[in-house]
Amino acid sequence: MHIIAIIACYRLCKSANIFQMRTFMYNPIAQFNVTRNSKSKDSVVALTNTNRRRFLTALGGSVGATSLAGCVGSGGDDVVTIGVLSPLSGDWTVYGEAHSRGLELAVQEVNEAGGINGQDVEIDLRDTETLPETVTEQATQLVRSEEVDVVAGTFSSAERNAAAPVVTNAEVPLLYPTFYEGQSQDEFPGVCNELIFKFGPVPSQQVNPWMDYIVSNHGDQFYFIGSDYVWPQETSRRVSEALEDEGGEVVGEEFIPLGTTDFSSAISSIASAEPDVVFGTLTGQDSISFARQFYNQGLNEEITYWTINDEEFATEGKGEDSSAGTYVSFDYFSMIDVDENQEFLSLTREEYGDDAGMNTTGAAMYNIGHMYAEAANAAGTTATDDIIEELEGMTHNGPQGEIHMREEDHQMVLPSYLVQATDSWTGYDDMFEMIDSTGPVEPEDADCNLPLSR
Image 1 (cartoon, rainbow, N blue to C red):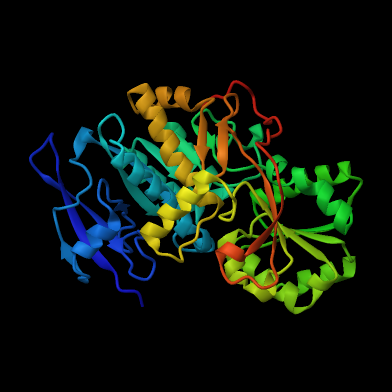
Image 2: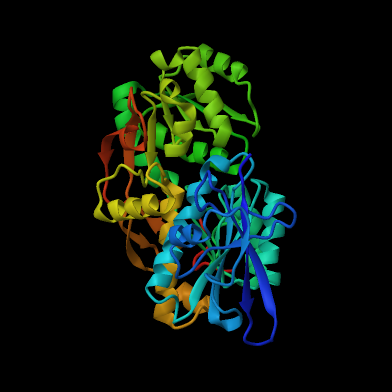
């Protein structure tokens, strides 16, 4: 069981002569990963203007300590607060660590550079527990009780759709980091919403650039298997259109309830259908369990597996024997040779240890922190309408290289990478072989009523 040191940090409010208490937790196994208070679900405030490693070392490794040094800002109007919704427990825990760390790193750099309009930036981190109902509860607390300036995060489309009505009613921006299914007016207010900016790729960026390669090299008969919610379902619909454009055919399709551990029935159906390619949109632990059983049955020797979910941490969970040869496509991998990425990885390892990894959502959250700060500093305010105006059309150099926020639909223009898991990987640095990459990929036009509304 992890030992958690709880450090209470009091802020003196300028507007009232009282102290506010916020709690953050230190897990010595997962260095500097902040988690929720299990009783209240209240979160944590990330350290500002203080290097976490130096701060924790100064505590002398104590199990519990209370200190006024290193407190995050001076309270009231003298701090900008980013509310963060991360999957720190539940089905998507595998992604949660990088998800929150990416923003923590950005906030540290922003504060070291002077903050936002001279104010420190703090993080109020909440655990979504991978449950939409928890997202609704936590988002409501963030925008109503804590009155955060902006909300960053949620992971799944279901989580985003749960947070969207809350932030819309409060007129607070939501900065969403995850690869997702694309925008349709039918899903408003979760997408096609003036208050929501999407920093992750859609299928036309993540999949379409590589369909010709996969079909040409491995065949055009596809079997789709995914988790049973909106992202896999809508993504599969869009990908099937791209496959048809290549003359291919979907020979089977199955959506599995979240939390499934036994995939024997699905694997039997796949074997019977005899596809050339299995296209996977399973998520979290389900993706890991499926891959292990797929490989254990030897189907990988006859059928190509292409997944758009199994980034570094999911692949690590599968292990070498259940991942070798799998294709994966994303806008970011920690292996990419971009100067900004090397700096990002160096910072990650400096803060969290030499074996710390990073993934696409961590890179997106890092971009969110920096781009939000740039927008607020340019506007001279954190007022919602001004932030929207500054983010629209913004170009930024992030870990992926140059990226661009499309003005009309708030969708990020990103590069795309196709990789294949190697036969004998030992860590993140040699986990994948680069097959090919693109420059920035313009996504398909969003199926939204433009201009966006709220």
